Image (cartoon, rainbow, N blue to C red; front, side, top):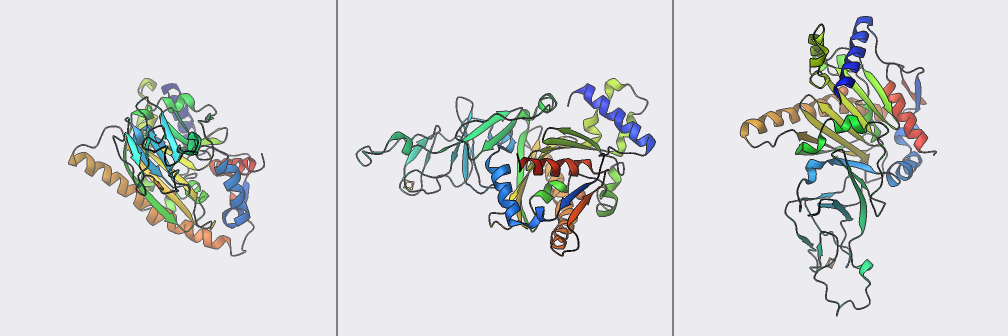
Length: 379
Ligand code: FES
Ligand SMILES: [Fe+2]
């Protein structure tokens, strides 16, 4: 985020602290409970939110050098992505064109080709078979031999995948471009990824991060004391949005020269990158959350991944201990505090006690996110 923008936001924060206010929506939001458990609703989401849109995979650090590759199946289909020597990332369905075996089992580095474990067809990094005997497949046209491509885009250090498009697709950031560019996300290194399976709808992973009103209650013993209570800065960027929760340390900037103000050291900055990912700035590192409906099709279950990206490679025991401790705090907070209560919410939704969830005016992030989801499903 550019410095002048940080200064403007810090001034908004100071004004709120003085008046004991927070950013507000004009009206409350009423969110139908079916959104969280209806199979028909989820079928529409699959069509309008996941099938027809690019989704964030992560930061460039996942695939830094030529030959770096990974297998991603979080969204259902198994996809193979590889950094080519020319620079661009190529993406394919991880399905051998001979008889459909999974071509690659795990990610790795330095790949120059991929060899299928079933009958040994080998493909180069463009997905073209290199060992096929024409004698055996005389009528098979080239297009039937090559791996099936999926769309991949890379912008501002972010990698996006469109599993249902054969070519790169333009990514709409709706005004976030310069702000994201200023983080220099392309320079971050991937540290670790954890996968979670929970008995709650995929959207609840996002909802968890979109208000801080629960901090003094649910996180009383952990992170609540770090943050200014009930204060959130909200801004919308098309379908995307940003929530900022200031830390109490921001008060140390009062009365100091604005030239030295640094919002990034005194807040948590959360971007919802529509429809299903969170990019979170956490003082000195970045976290990316991706959440999807569970492959079983049950709307009351989800699969999610959180990845930690760090500014320098963790090449010492001390560095690894530091980042492991960060990862532990992150996982413990959501796994032991947020998600158990959210799973109880998921169970309560089916009770018939209410037809909708209520989002207060002081929860503009939730109102925006769900309004945009619903709008996307009728567009
Ligand atoms: S299925 Fe891959 S070589 Fe036969
Ligand atoms: Fe929380």
